[in-house]
Length: 427
Picture 1 (cartoon, rainbow, N blue to C red):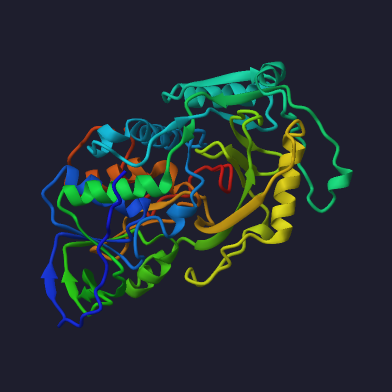
Picture 2 (cartoon, rainbow, N blue to C red):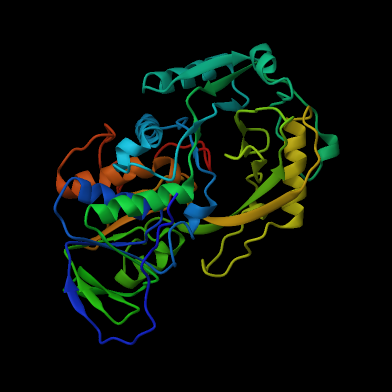
């Protein structure tokens, strides 16, 4: 696969430039690049996308668990996730690239949650009626497929692991078509597709100020000294979104908190089982085998001390804490006692921007004319990115395109009532 090069700042000093475009997208991760691509694939608007990072997937996108699944509390979000999954499953068609880097690996997703028969039936209906391929599996069905698993649904107290009393679940939800894509590859593909459609993409270029005129945002000032005027600025800056909003005096209603999430990788051998993506309600964690098949990725339990907030997204610990690694491995051993628990362990940390009110993003016009927000994805950005880009682009251009979701473009509006959620990364 040919290596893609990305344009950044040069060392040569050049006089400040003044230019005009229709739209400036701040942030070129999976969300920003999806927005830029979706605007230009359906319009002739002139788009500039800037990112202070040296290339794609160096922020939250690069630390994404990259799972595509559709079990959400709100039916419209189910459909949004499903249309995004269809895009990932048809990535060459969606991007128009003949040789995209990313592809889709269908693995299936098992939800080991404590649910009554009626609750499971309601979840099945919600997903199935919105197009998702889903099954209800009995405990014996699950163990016939994956005998290495333990189906305990009792909450695990990490302060008293030795006192845990297991209680086995009886039936479980299974998403047949859930899978994984390549987050860094998908981001690079969207950047390439955006450039093909005419987007001016500049990596290594930060925004130092938002330019306003009589209460309207009219452009951005870059750290090159250049000033770009525009009709619209789209803030897709991920964990840095609050900094951009503060420059414009925008978005004081929702609490969007950059939060460190820790991931553990453990060696996985050829003789280890082919487990499904597993969402673990007893530990609020999840697990999936890596694309190479040589590692399993374990998301740390969703408990406060393992999810510290940070006020500076440029300064956080990228290596996982030892205590978190040990608890994550213990949680996985609790879930999969039939797996040999040996091998090299590594890990990393990334930032999710958590919407503290309802775990859903803020998407659409801010209260400041000329500034749109695409912020606060709470760990769901990669899952929803193609559909979110479509919602923004459709609202801006008024034009439909293939793979668009059949939901209201103002579903995540800044002035909405908080949406229903099961909380946290499961939403």
